Amino acid sequence: MFLALSAALVFGCKKDNEPDSSATSATVKANLSRTWQAQTVKGIPGGSGSFGITVYTRGGGSANLINDLANFFVTFKQDGTFERSSLDTPGAVESGTWTLASDNKTITMKSSTGATLTYVADPVKATNATFKYTINVKNPTGLDLQIVQKAAAMGSTLPEGSTLNFEVIPK
Image 1 (cartoon, rainbow, N blue to C red):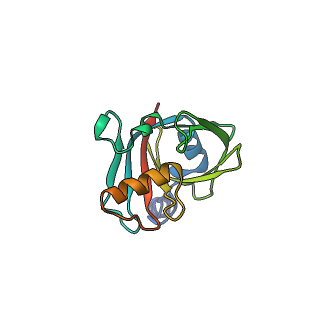
Image 2 (tube, one colour):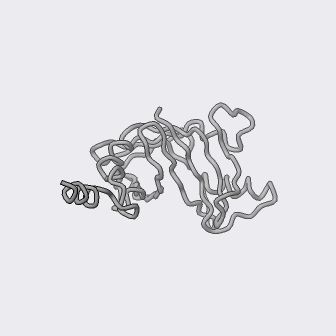
Image 3 (cartoon, rainbow, N blue to C red):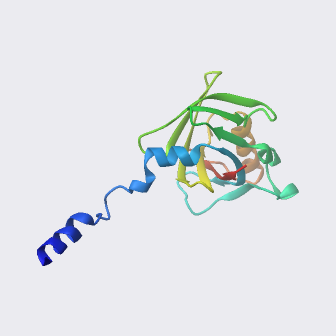
């Protein structure tokens, strides 16, 4: 009996370095499949995880650096399609297809216009998520250009690898 109990404990316990089964592709896709809106958007300079600047906070009004983010939304549908507010053209809605990479974090969105956008979504829960978007600092347009210009007005130059972290909640 002791041998059977010992065997059950040894073979029944998960090792700390084993992947977390709760982060399966099906779970992440189920959690993603909804409409998300921005709660907070923070700019994080490349190579830094501790320093950042809050670009937008829901309800922040004139304190927001970019108030257009109040209209940000993205809807990930179970059938692999999406709709989202354009980050480059306020009021415009883009659509296309999305896929989740095998890491269960990287979302690739291909719009019907052919543009590709990549977010790293970590964590993704049914009640909130964080979408990390890498800012194009070399050839910025649209929202990227706004962020680069706001940073310059504050006396900063954004290094490569700078990101916008969208902390989102269901709409």
